[in-house]
Image 1 (spheres, one colour):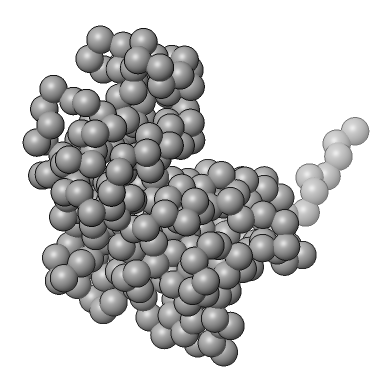
Image 2 (cartoon, one colour):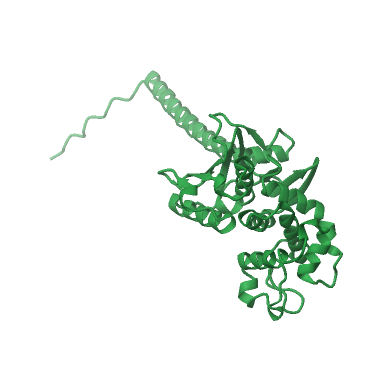
Length: 326
């Protein structure tokens, strides 16, 4: 038996086929436009992020102390060690001259880098020799021990604060090149004056964005430990906000009886150590340093320390904002 063929679907008219083609072309154009917009958006975002990051990245990371109109540069690693050397003098209540002598000595002996080598058995920041009674090899490579040992010896030199830097340093070091320390005196004076608080708003660092993100607790703990190590400030002298992202430091707890100078000593210490502590903003009095203002100042665009946009801090108080992973 023959089965009839199924009925054929009527063919679409020419006008219907044309309308369908138009709809398909419109869909393709819409999809293509969405893809292009999305791609451009992604590229634009990437470019914006890249531009922003480049804008916050200095040509070279460095730190500067200014004295009498002259800028004296150190690398962030050198500045970090300078903060310890000068900070130790501040916490001991020694004059800024002691810090100048200490910095000049370390610059000559090790370029302010805690090296693990030297002439014969000399090691560390001050190239101290275990065989000459400065401590064990491990001790003289500990910058805290080495700096303390240097000042222990310096304060035993009669009238050291009135001696030329090279004579005071040589009385401690007994170097084979006794006149070499003098070449570092101007740089050391600039850094000692800033880190002892005698030269306000004189120290800045050009640092890129913080890369190694740590938890707020870890950052705050490390900052507090470093503050105690260098300046001896602890307990009620240091408080942290609930998030652990802002440290409030009572600089007036330092010896000397000059809260304003002590505050500048702590504030500029915080800038000099920012590459290690992840500090991103430092406030003292009516002035503020940020990583951005430090970079701008290095490019010749304004001052590194700028007026704060909030009430002036109490004399003797310093606030430090720390960067941490959220």
